[in-house]
Image (cartoon, rainbow, N blue to C red; front, side, top):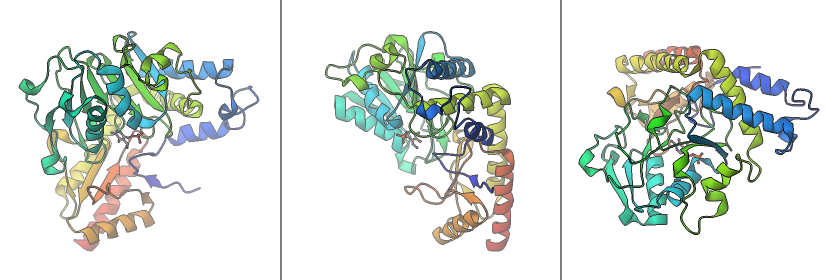
Length: 363
Ligand code: PMP
């Protein structure tokens, strides 16, 4: 077997230990005589799996009791619509910070469903291809907005909010798709957190929503049943068939995180990896990081040589050497190394060694 180092932005590399355990249990889970994939979601065996997954997520993230955890489908992209349908219900207005393509989609979908005139853009970093997190001027916040939306880690551009905006009583709604479980977060600071699973949590197909209870149950008239958080909250994420196998893998990933020392240890592990890569980029004569200072993501590290042909050569040679999916997003070009929880330190060390060799040969 020769597993590569996979720097994909998602679906992304998973802990080898988790994959091996899943392989061991693939044909028969415990003494159930069946695979988790084949189990009825209404069975006792499966109920134990989803309950254990939720309990572990609550413990690992210290989720307060007045928050519901929902296991949904439709990706983070469906949340762009579900959020306004469920939350834009008092003043019918919301605030947005535009830090990239995903943040913009959350804004556009709300504008489409609830009117652009009700969607306030507090700040944007579009002027410099989203390579920084804009300063937020509090006088631009709407104190009566139904929610304030941010994309906490911007997967494509490699930026992240080092500090959360203080939105007072306005619920902060955050897309954590590419940074959930990478470090501790204070869940009580958010009205809602959501994330697609395919980076730090498991396979694509599972979407996790963590939402304060008082924000549930007031969806706009005409909201489809499946798009109403209340439907899923009232039915323990079992109104319809949940993504059963993805939930099982998340449970295994959470067990792995617990074994690694929880989110504090995960943060240290991620900071170490990011420091190795950024410190090389900061000293390199060939490769340049595209994000500076405190806005730098711990998870997605974009860089360029400044020469598109040389970028392409690097991506191709990296692939030949077992470092795959290192090409930047098509909207920004260059390279991007996504170094999620499951990327081992030696993966980053070996990548840097390879970059040094490439630099010596090409600078
Ligand atoms: N938000 C962020 C921050 C993302 O990185 C992505 C996907 N890479 C999405 C939303 C969209 O997620 P999905 O494909 O699960 O709809």
